[in-house]
Each structure stands twice: as structure tokens, then as C-alpha cells.
Length: 393
Image 1 (cartoon, rainbow, N blue to C red):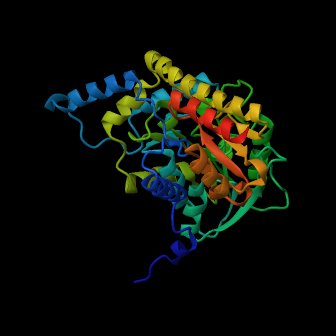
Image 2 (image 1 turned 90 degrees about the vertical axis):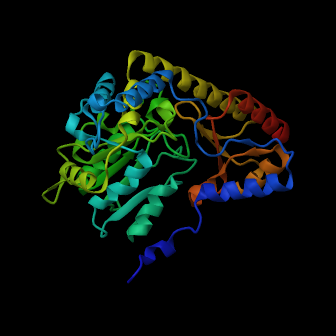
Image 3 (image 1 turned 45 degrees about the vertical axis):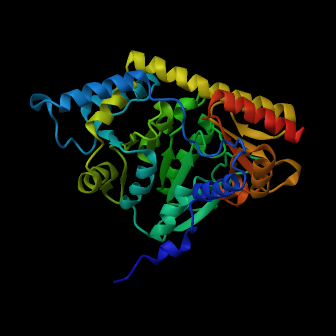
């Protein structure tokens, strides 16, 4: 028996596990320290009431033989796919129902989609980057190249014609930087992918935070994208489903390479390796798109956007350079006084009892940057801001 030795090439611990351990060690040594966590991008508001009501009704359905449901369709129930289709249409993007695949979250699909691609592909990811993009391809033994996302380009790199890549990861609004591509930026990437017969894996998990109508929420708003892109989205940040687990992936019907149709391949993969998302959860997800659900979700998004504004205003007051905060729940700030990110992590934890995410955990280009999340409680966000201002003023 031989093991996959590529696992030896990934970091021994996940970024957020390292953060959790450091915080645990600190709180054990300082049990009375009032630590405020603004690191992991987990939501804090409860599920929308419309989703709760829909899930309760679904539980009741399953309690009666005449309305009981067993195995569901692996690609998702039509009632949820139709709701997602209508949601895209409301933003000017037309999808076929068969292009939508419901899953247990964007993170799973971002990793699982790699089943469709040969090991002999060159992968291009931004630096800094969401670690899952790198780790899943490292596990598969693929060659990985990095695009240079930095302060000078606003952490929104554009294609380098001299670089040849087969699989391209884009995330907009970006995790961790909060930066958002405009249509011209995405068009440049679509043109590059079409010219190089490459595929774009577009992570749109934070699309619901785009408030500027001039900015695209989906890569399929760009002409030609259906010939070269797959899009991943999630209910985690939209409606607080981080613990409930539900997302979806859009694989266009016209996406073909080497005579193989990626939509049909993904359908085959899912029906072989995945049993679908629970009926109860899908009913809750579909309720997000109802009139009442949309209203409730908007209230939650506005709550987090206000937290982001509070954080951004503090950075402005302190004169600290940052991206994000306006169409994203993240603030990506430049560490003060030339500090490196883990140094700033320790400084902030020890002197302000505030936890953030060191940019070095996202790549070499993040070593002097730091991420704060707007997903926290309002009062704690305000308290954290006051502590940070007092420390850095």
C-alpha cells in the first residue's frame, strides 16, 4: 500500500487551527482577559426566521408517512434550483436549471471540483490566497503558480500574458483582502482564459456584500464566461448557514474541453460521490429567496455592513492603509510601524485582547497585512475598535 505523499507538502496545521491554539494558550494564562475574536469569518446572527419556519415545516413533513421523503436528487431539489435561477435573473444573469448544483458548501465544491481535472495542469492562484485553493491542489500534486496581488494593484492582479496556466482561481469579493474586481478586470481574466483554453474557478461566496451596482456579483455577467468559468456560491455568509451547510456551484452547459463536457462530468461525479443536501436544509435555503426571506437577509447584511463601516472608519482615523470594508465583510489592513503580521497578531492580542488573522497565513504577500472581520457582535466590534484606536493612536 502506498500513501499520497503530496500530503507531506502541505502545512502541518490549518491557519485557523494555529490561531485557535495561540488564543487558547493566551486565555489559559490570562483567564480574566476579555478577548474579542475578529479573526475567523464566521457569522454571529441567527438564521433568518423565514428559513427557521421553512425548516420546521419540513421536519413536520418528514414526520408523516404520506409526506415523508427519502433520498433526494444529488444535484438539488428543483424548488431550490428554481429559486437560485430566479435570484441570478434578478441581477441580470440567465442560468439553466441544469447548470445549478446544490451542495453542502462552497469550500467542499472548491476542493471536489478538482476531480474533473488531470494532475498535469498548472494552477494559478493569487497571493495572498484562501488556503484551501493551495492545499487541495498540493494534495493532488499539481504545479502551482502565484499571481502577485499587492498594495500597488489594490490586491486585484490582472493576467500576465507571459504566464501560462490551465486552472485559475479568482475570488471576488476577495477573501482575505476584501478587494472586488470591476467588470474590466474580470473581462481581462475571461479573455485570458479563452485565449489559453483555461478554466476559471470563481469563488463568489461573498457576492451578497456587493452594494455598488457597477461591480459584478457573478463572473457570468461577463461575456464569454460561460465558455471558461465555474462559479461557487454559498448560503453561509448570505443567510448564516455556516453551521447548517448549504451552497451551490454553477457549471455552464457549454463548458467543454478536449471533447468532454464539464457539466456532465460534474453531474456524474456528484451522483457517484455525493448524496445531496438534506431536504430540511434545502427548504430553509429556498426560503432565503422568498419576499420575507430577502427582507430578513438584507437586515442581517446591513448589520454586518455597518460593522465593516465602523472598522473602516477607524482605519481612516488612524491613517492605516486598507482594502475592503465597503463591498466586503473584511478589512485587510497594513500592519502599523512595519510590523509583520504574526508580530502584530501577538501585539494586538496581548495589549488590546483583540484577535484577528495574520496575513502571512494567506501567503508571502500577506506577511505585512492583517485581516479583521465584520461578522462579530455590534457592541464587541465597537469595543474592539476603541481598544485598537487607543493602542495605535
